[in-house]
Image (cartoon, one colour):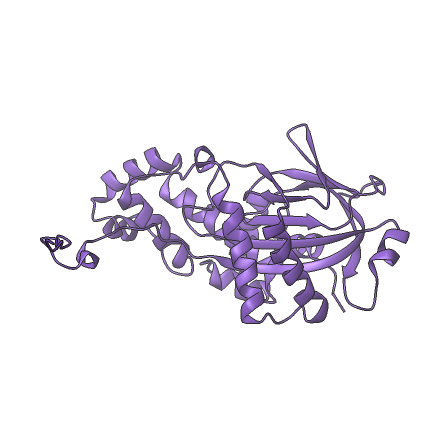
Length: 306
């Protein structure tokens, strides 16, 4: 019988062939499980992804004239900078932009007690993917709760009802796996990634990682290995805005994330986002968002969980 041999590749071990993979960094901002009796927001729009799952139905989201019910058989994922509103009781006090009533779910309160008060059980996860994957088309994605996804969500909820400040390795894997499963089902056509030019993508990543530093056009052009004028024209063509306008917007977006998801003082946030001082930061922040950083944090901060 004639021996048969596998043909050995001319280049030997195929692992020496260069492969290029997109770089992204999953940054978990929060993962919480609350009971809610009021969840009325006239408008929400934040520079990070959101995942919502309600174990008890009753809450609704409105986006571009469409209503999305949060039911126990669905998971909702919302792209960054999507402007939407929410409703649970649909009652607003005069002059208020939002009403929020709820607290952390724990083993001291039962699902039946939440139902009896007319409330819902609300799991929410906030995260970023970094540039350019946070710059997708605004929108809301609805997913069926499969048995596979249910197992992950139940494991996450079990962890949160016991310890909401610390996650074990298994729970952290479940959170990241849930996010990965949902993102993988987003249609490819919805990933509007701002630019496909590798030079601009490198600069976008550099900006995001160095918001606390000086980011003049000359510095950014050197990162792209281009002349300043040529870089500025290319950046504006690819992104639709000038480099400095983009940098300023990213600084404010990062500040919004820190105001929501950190205990840093406003002075600290000003430094971390590259502003000269709190006064400069507050002036620019109010010009772009319409409110001061202090008011932004006060009005959109979740109440203490204890």
